[in-house]
Length: 331
Image 1 (cartoon, rainbow, N blue to C red):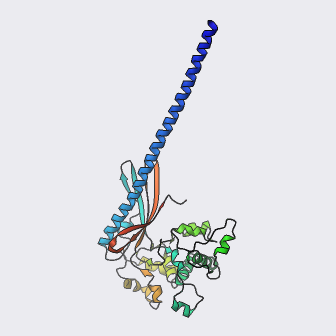
Image 2: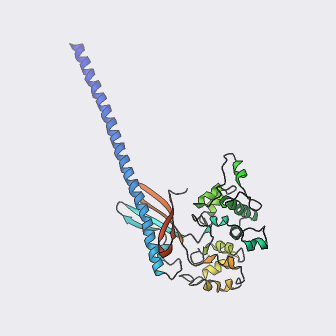
Image 3: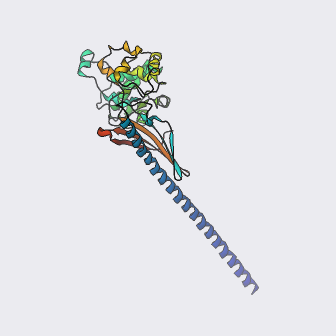
């Protein structure tokens, strides 16, 4: 009986050990499942809070449109930087920027007008010349500036003809170690320029906040009322280098707090008066309003963070439509 009692004790101990192991495993899986559910709930809540930042943006812009006299400037509510709203179990944050205060790369899809072809069929279209002048104002060398303009042109235009002296179409892309094709269509986001042959990470990081890609829009217009005074190079580029950086800086420093009321007031500035004989097409690229705005928003709930970038278009009747939305952020 003694050996049997020993075996029975060992059996009981073995059963207890197995039950303890199973219980520990169940407890661990239960905790992980609970933690996963909480994380998913927080992430979902952060997602909807981030979308709420779009609704807040529409409301702010609509209020500014109602109060404004047809101009968009930096004294309006939308231009308030890094706004944070507290909400239940989290916060909503975001900033709005005017997409007419950056260079729209999609404008490079434009070709020469009939008049320009008659003058010089080999010249670059106006947006390309403006981009080159802007890059040179940022002290980029002439070769790199022209190379980028030509290759972005080939990237977004609809044909397979090589642009300028440094263009690149499908043969150049298909010959790479990891081949792909030039899309030959407008960009949806300015980060696509990283796929353009010759645009390095360093160059992109430098230009990231100075370039943009307006979905479905191929015009380059610059709102001189919302242009950052610290970025006179954008204005220099739009004027094809007719002003120096210092002169453009003086013009922007002389801007009224609530912007110029009419475009005539802008051209009446002392420095701008000597450029009154500029081509009317060049003049038409400088404006005082905008129809496109970019929201960089996000939300945080507990440990979950959700970020988005949305492009909103102002339609007739001041209706705002989200034309592009991207989730996450760039490193």
